[in-house]
Image 1 (cartoon, one colour):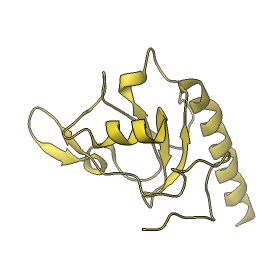
Image 2: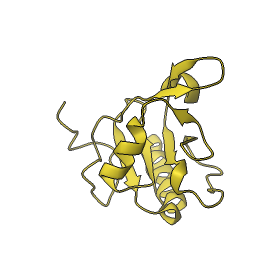
Image 3: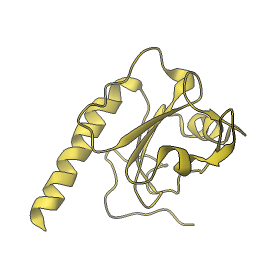
Image 4: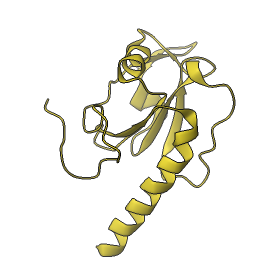
Length: 128
């Protein structure tokens, strides 16, 4: 699938922006499910738990957050771990259509990126 080049995508540009986000299998004690079935649909912030050293502030954010790896949810095949490494990022904001809105290379970038997204979403809602 070719990446999206226009629409609601984050600045600054990153090669992952506009690409389809991987759909890993999440393992629990009882079963294995697709990430969407565990985390839900809509706007999602997916964080690489292997790189967390403390809590991430996402209050009043327009997205649902999920930590995968480390202290978070356990994925079956390291699909996201590999993706995060390849994209050189610690988190991704995923749109409801499963395309990547934007990625953050450092944990400190998450809160400001979510604030920008919230402002952009509010501005779009206001113009409708």
